[in-house]
Image (cartoon, rainbow, N blue to C red; front, side, top):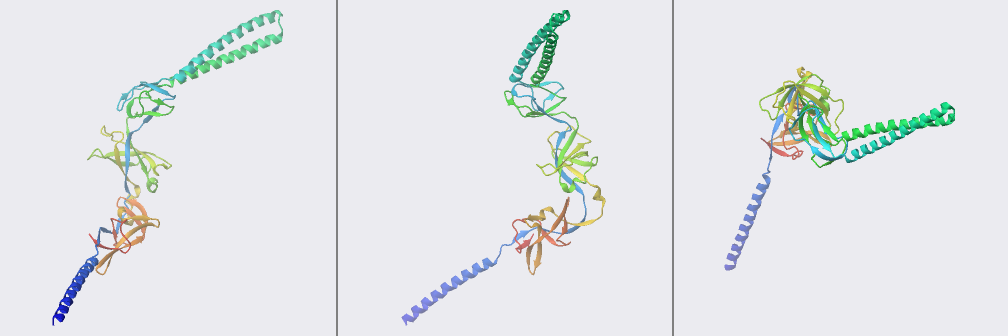
Length: 367
């Protein structure tokens, strides 16, 4: 009787333990079944009229910017440059020690004096031989030799004179003068610094008008023509906009930025616009008046991999929502987003965030 009771107790404990394990397993299974769904924002593929309004970023500069540099090498011994300084045309801005140039100049003067002495000697010799020849006291060959010596001495003297002028210019190259009225916008050197010819030591804003320098991509550059008006907004001048006109359009691409440089002249300029300020330039192209319609989706909805551009379609399958990777072909980038040439239809839903973390066929929830 006691043995049966003990067996019953042991059996009950084992059953209870198994039940507990089963309940825990069921709880874990239920937790595993509760898949954490990634929230996804989406938008519908819409039909829009082609909007050819484009806005690009640029930088304000004066219409004439001069890079200042010496035409000789040496150590700067005088430096009258500072940021924001107003300078006048012809004002001395800097000077080099110019040791080598001054030495060469002194050597050229010495060569000139020597050539002058030889010229005087040959002239006196020619005059003496000529007098003897006219009296019949010397030969024609002696007279011709004297004339040749004089011609040679004269050529050496003229060459020495040109050498003095050249070396004098080299000395003058050690002085830097303001090429015109303006304001110093940048300083790249200091006194006692050793500089080389052509090294930019400062930048002078010499012009009075302001312009915006920017780069445009190849998909819109052919729509930009000189003379078209644009709207300009300065990041640092809130609530105001300025009119501008396209002044220059480069025919070749800038290899550093892979864009085409464009210059826009500010028509109604202001003292508030200063060189170096960031600007946003909005272009309104002629095709903006067309009524042709196109499929457009936000730019952030478009991804790109080694296969090309793609989007993640948001589709409902029963009670679930999944995303499916869909290859597409994009056209121009408009102010509303990318124009879709192939791969989508109006009304389809596409994810607009987190494209790099989504997987094809992944279950999500909409937000």
